[in-house]
Length: 154
Image (cartoon, rainbow, N blue to C red; front, side, top):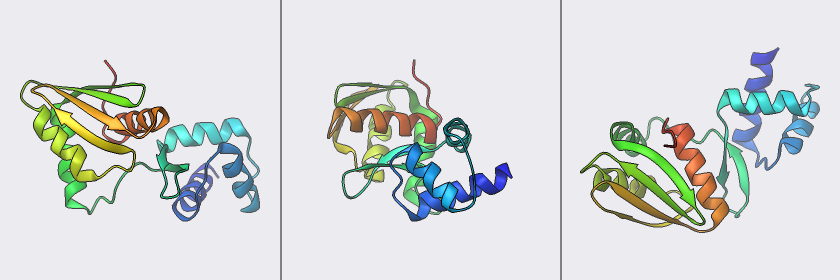
């Protein structure tokens, strides 16, 4: 039952813009799954879903991953795994700490993915500053980096 429910969640978020757990709960009920908010919360955590800025400016649930067949995303993920130490947001900026000499490559990786939330980036030797559209966008961007690229806060 759990696997079928989680498969339905993935199907829903891939086909519809789902903003809240309540919306997801309603859509699951329409699909024949009676679930509580606590169950949905656990499923979201287990599926590692994130909130992402949609084209119409709303934050919706997503897997947080670009297409695995996209060579730019695959290369960018590898660069992050090898160079990023921590990610932390403050207001509408995100500070990404890297190993010495690796910030330039990691910054180029951020730029190549073309995140909707990002207005611009600047890199030094071991630090990247990312300017996001809003404070919420910075939090979403930080969360997405941590979850999809397995980077931990320091």
